Amino acid sequence: MFIGTITKIYPFSAPATVERGWAVRAHVDRVVSGTLSVDTFTFTVHSPTQSGLEVGGTYTIKAKWIGNGYVVDELQWMKTTRRRTRPAKKR
View 1: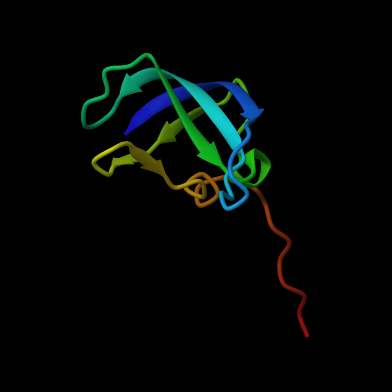
View 2: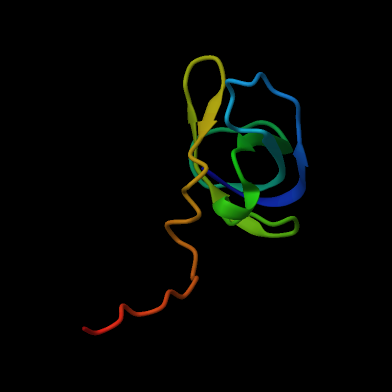
């Protein structure tokens, strides 16, 4: 897990079977847990907007090592965003 600042979000060409068509590049500001020996970290998402990511934003990024690379849950930021929702209508 690390804290990173998003430096670039860009579409990339992927096979039609891949649902994550956007790449997100982050500068690694600080490693919180584990080891990460790179200055930048790139991962993919289906939709940066739905994930709540913006260039210039700083986020805690949880990445799980799976033996040949990292997997990032693209919905992890949706669970913690401070977006307000409308209260349910009373019936």
